[in-house]
Image 1 (cartoon, protein in one colour):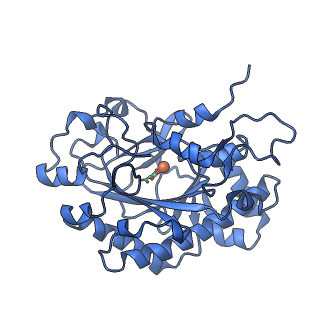
Image 2 (cartoon, helix red, strand yellow):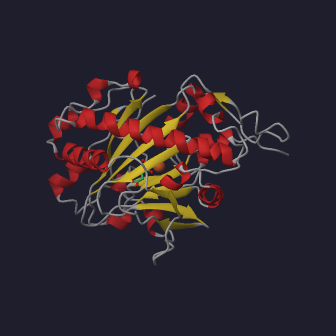
Length: 346
Ligand SMILES: O=C(O)CCC(=O)C(=O)O
Ligand SMILES: [Fe+2]
């Protein structure tokens, strides 16, 4: 698995001032897309503290939100403020390092992890206006520590703490979601063999012609559950809802949580993963940190037997390694990847 190597967008913008956009980044299709909810409309907010108190009303609200939106903001979560703030500051400092220093952590051929970009599978494909740092974070034995920045000083210990705290929240949410779907709370955890987490840190440089580029192409996440942290005040995440792009307005300190493809497959479509994208700001850089939670690489990806006892399986079953290979070897195009996992009836 690999992604073709591409130039750093940040370095390009720093060198040229970002006024001209090379053709490979021009996305005419994005300019015509309708954006909805420019008023005060907001994605639903879920209170983690209430869920942990076994509050029936909050967990049934969560169930409704998972069915209707597939995206929500999680407030009152248990990750200490200093861990969240430390993570934000560490990643901002990393992207401020000189280009040569960041290159020490660059992706190597045939690898996904490191500083670079993902899902670039052909030389003529359109490119996203972003640089990323992508790392395996849990379990700790899966880490490739030589790709973990050692600058700023506390980067590694900060990401270690952040990753454990976020994994804990994801595990708790998955247990409540399983219960909401009529399963034993531990059902998903049992299929996951502990589960894995990877973290994708996104850096979107400003672009003077922001409406002509895309920060992150439309996609759904391949995992069970994603927790995204908005690092600075610049907005950019949009979700596809009723055929329009709906901007997410982050609540200070909240995680933006979304359902991924594996969850949709496990539950035979009871909850759906939602297409989303990131747009770029004309003047200011934007950063976000996405933590992806998936079953162990030894797990099987397919509808859970508890779910399909009395119904047809709507998705294929494949081993996780094959699933990942298929996901990372295609260009990101909305939910196309998941469509290929569907069993077509009739
Ligand atoms: O930048 C964002 O807010 C979204 C990032 C995202 O969708 C991802 O990393 O999968
Ligand atoms: Fe995503």
